[in-house]
Image (tube, rainbow, N blue to C red; front, top):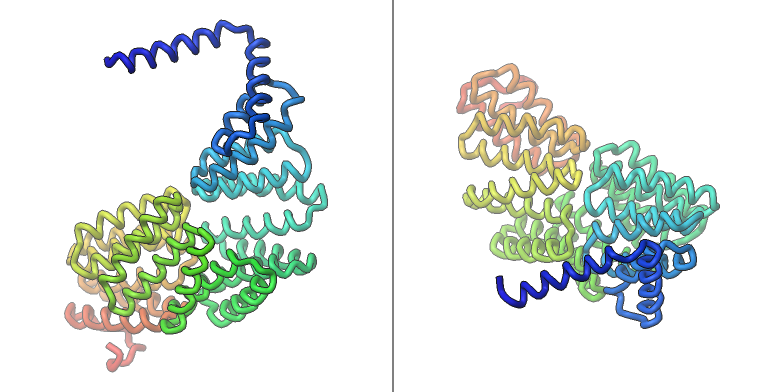
Length: 450
């Protein structure tokens, strides 16, 4: 052991021993003195949590104001550093020493931190407690915000009817309050749900109304997210020329305002557009840039989705080993974050890759694992793709009855989702496999479509 290390080790032992030798009341007095002295020095935000901790250990009601003030500063600082677990701890402690509307606000902030960490059940519990407090204190705006955020949790879990109920309740409350900016935010939440449900026309109309409202209110950050979501909607509807300017505008605002996580997600969406445009090298570079930013900002939900998108690009380019590694990582990340849609997509992509490689047993196993996850998430498009994959595998196995059943169900799901591109692609793939396997296609599908 080096001399410097020995000194540090012994110094820490001496410090801890000296601390333990103090009477509890004396230790509390020392912490109190430290909290007051450090607070008077107006130290930088990075020391705020330490000041709050000294105030807590002083165990004195007279120091609660110092603790509360510095816990809030610390939580904001930690959020800016994407240290969400530590941020959550600060909000939870703050809620313990507050009452009424202040406690409700801290609980709502704690719920948001928990949601970022993928702790959806914990977040839901915190929002529920905050809702009661907001109601008791007559804070209609806080109550409305909580309803919208609970909608996010339901959407992540695939509880789409509950999500819509929460979003509508939040939007109605914002409309009653007459806050144009929050009305826009509420409209965006509901429009995003419509997009997930492939209610394209309704989603577009609501997005455009929301964009007008947030611009009127000067909510630049909301404008950026809305532009990105509109880009996603246009990409979903094969309106690629309309998607690109929206992504670029969202990216510009995100960079100008320092919204790094949104920048990362927008780069990932732009990468997907480039992939669809056949600009594969550019798409890969954008995906990797997006992943670096999402890692930096601790946006693990965004990372999971971007990893899956990059993996699809890789296995379409026959880089199967690399793609599988990315998909396994995406699968783990999405599971940890409670992202059902992302988990189902990763399983489905793994299955598709193994099917293309001729690994029918592994592909079927993965498709069968993916199906209930996609059904729980309410993802009609993905359910359709999985069923079409199972149709091909059963056809190759010579089970014509089950193959035809999945053929019909898969195409029906894709048609319901409005996904014309995948409908045509899956129809062609199934037709080729059925013909090669000598399995009769469903009788209600014209031969010209096979």
